[in-house]
Image 1 (cartoon, rainbow, N blue to C red):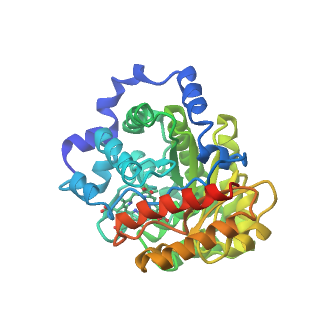
Image 2 (cartoon, helix red, strand yellow):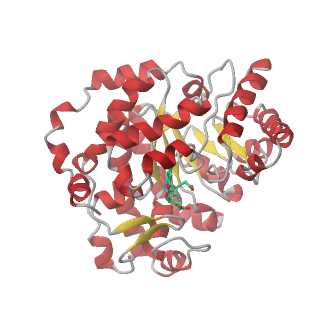
Length: 377
Ligand code: CP3
């Protein structure tokens, strides 16, 4: 990593900008400005003129303009460069006409910001230098201070000015999913080392998840303070555990995150992959919106999640690789099933696949808007 980026990660350049922090009044203005958007209204289960839509991983490798903007810049270096974060976050909004932007960042950004040796390898994902295995490793994980991520405050400030009444979604990884990378040391199919700590050393497990929870709360609060109008907790790999273990080992920490964000008033979204058996428990963690992957039809998800929640999802991202008439038929089916929910935000069941044709995403956004406007939610 170049010296300049190292300095940025330490916050050197941004400490001087501390006075530029947004006032409470400005934050209230941002929240008020986006409150009438279809996305925020659907999160709050208020009537909407059409079903709002955005796509997980909408910014990224499926866009040629993303590849051009990122050329020669490492992923984590890009995440710490406000101008790049702003540009890449806006690219899918311009291209697809989606109803919300999601901050260009990554779930490992707060870990890097507190000094964890983690990098993102192209085509691999996050890789950790020294995986966490012992009490001493956990004790080394320090708290996250707003100054550690000044680049985010700066990028979000620029973004909300640019986005106007279009909401910006901030996000973080769930403590379980962060623990997966920290303990296993990188991507894995089954995260065996992580689960071996969870089953074999509950005390160490909870100590680690407690610290990750504190880091995540600070990280999300910084994003809301800077102007994010909603937040999503990506507990992507939570589906690797069964309901009893989820309740014991994961839920208390995720619940603490949502509770700590409650006073901000922004809608909270909770998402994981392969979480069909956990949807009820994920709802109990306290978010207003539960994200559903493509394995459980939305009308079935309605039965699994407690009343009083909006649902988000859930077209299989691989459907977008099929001919358009298949995409249209499947997307219409998702919309129809979504009407059985108290409120629905259209999304994919997981992130956009890199080989997806951007024109298909633009066409899909239009289809969701026109089809749902005929029969408003
Ligand atoms: O949705 C968006 O458009 C915002 C951007 C975003 C990224 N990562 C950018 C990114 C979001 C929301 C994430 C979250 C994230 N990161 C998750 C949770 C969501 C999910 O997919 O389940 C997870 C598990 C990670 C960890 C991570 N980072 C993985 C598994 C990878 C992919 C590795 C690869 O190259 O296939 C990354 C890298 C990453 N994060 C890229 C992007 C655009 C690719 C980097 C590149 O362009 O080289």
